[in-house]
Length: 220
Ligand code: 5GP
Ligand code: ZN
Image (cartoon, rainbow, N blue to C red; front, side, top):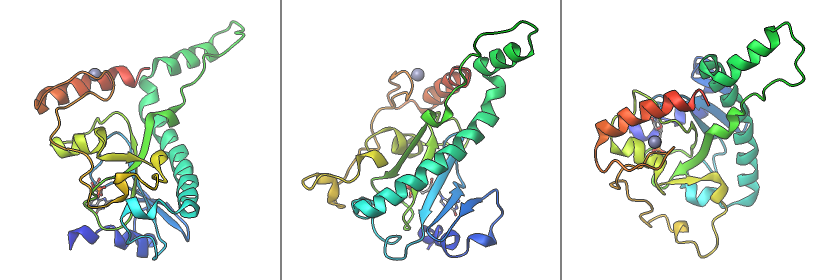
């Protein structure tokens, strides 16, 4: 069953190239999403056999486990942020200014602040995951990827189908605790993650706009 495709990474992380399995320990495996929907898209896989088969909306309500996932996700974001910085900062104006300031003969009181790329990531789960084993998405906000090919790819990260890790634990009476609750409507009109502009059901126009936003975002 292709829905079990993440289990192999959990069971045998050493079998994979370090560019796919980025890091692992006894408790977690951090991998690169095989079909990234943004510039950086990683998956954090808990290895605990008593958790990995649970629905994420159930598993993440255990406060002790949640704390562990949070701290591991924070480490993963640091790693992802430095990779994002390497990938896009050569285009970044703030970085250029930084280099110019350092190279200039004049003494400068203050270097321009460098950008905090960890703020450009979102961490969370899909309300109805397609893959069976517990996985947490760590994804840069840009949604700039040639793998982003249809409505579900965009809306599953940009509607309430995406549940941020911060929302856990869910309140006792939160309807999202009920895993049969159909959280999030993937058929919604497209809304730009950056400026909020609406694109109806015009995927091509959304993609063109995402390209423009990417060019501005990476130079922020
Ligand atoms: P879900 O919708 O279940 O939350 O997301 C599953 C994610 O797993 C998707 O983003 C998909 O691209 C990714 N994925 C599916 N199969 C594989 C695989 O075999 N290897 C890796 N590394 N990622 C996969
Ligand atoms: Zn926009």
